[in-house]
Amino acid sequence: MRPNYCKKCVMSDQRPRIVFDAEGVCSACRYWEKKDVVIDWEKREKELVELLNRHRRSDGRFDVVVPSSGGKDSAYVAHVLKFRYNMNPLTVTWSPHLYTTIGWENFQGLISSGLSNVLGTPDRVTHAKLTRVCTDQFGDPFQPFIYGQVNFPLRIALAYDIPLIMDGENGEVEYGGEEQTENLRGFSIDDAESFWFSGLPVEFWKDFGFESKDLYYYQSPKLSEMREKNIERHFFSYYKYWKPQDHFYYAMENTNFLPNPAGRSEGTYSKYASLDDKIDPFHFYYMLLKFGIGRATSDAAHEIREGLITRDEGVELVRKFDAEFPAKSREVFMTYCGYEESDFLASIDKWRNTDLWEKDSAGNWVLKYQVE
Image (tube, helix red, strand yellow):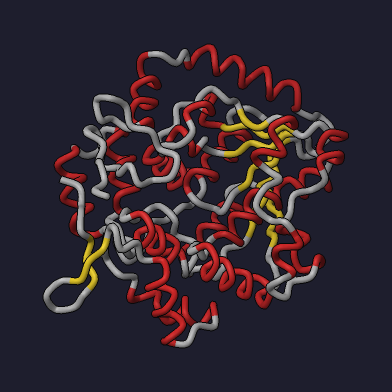
């Protein structure tokens, strides 16, 4: 199973749900072409203003929830909504597994810039146990974070009676996924069962020792509650041209955002994305094990589409950094998940896709294929 790589960027066809056309170009690159020549951004700006006018409140109550880690993209969305569009956003943060120093500083910078926040922090025992189970069962240490990231803002929107949630990008089109989501403004109540309410059947998790009360904030609210409050969830990237490096500079100037003081993150060359979680490198490493593509591939593909680097530069960066083992994060990850050395190595072996990996003459695992 030799992967195919996009002719315009460096993305592999092993990425789940991505589509390549007859010319060998991925769906994310084709969407970025449309952003410059097809999409009417003035029209979408008017749609955004109409949406915000419909939800804006004048009595001091919050009128939009912005899911936010304190990272550059969500900080940009929240700040622009408040200071350019005169909304009163409530930023809602689902805590990382383990905050990094720079992640905590950027989170505090978000609040210090004039943005209110609710921080949801699940109990460490349940969260760590769920992380271990998700790693062992699905090969994804970040699944518990994703559950909370999606569902906690819904619960806060209900609790504060805020019927509008503004997410950042539509990842399916910005990074490559289901093409039918290309023109979605966001998720309506009718989309809820497909997009919000999947992935966490309580009965499944009870087999691993969890009780219903352990999983409450990881699960979506009832569909009837969402209908009653008419909760809407929109993508800011539908309305505004989404360009992450511009968000980096905006957040540096307006929300005290700082890049990685180490100069780059493990597994990539980037210094300004995914900075807040100490175990984040293993989220990308398990992706590398399963699909043969890692963090540098994701970063380089996006920067090629943004016109920040050439494809040749992207290829060089991927080949240099993508397969880097996150050695600096290893002990933290193992301790957090409760792994002994043998269990940890068994997990790595379990999720390594041997169609994409092989051992070299020295007995070390190496990727069979990388982008050219």
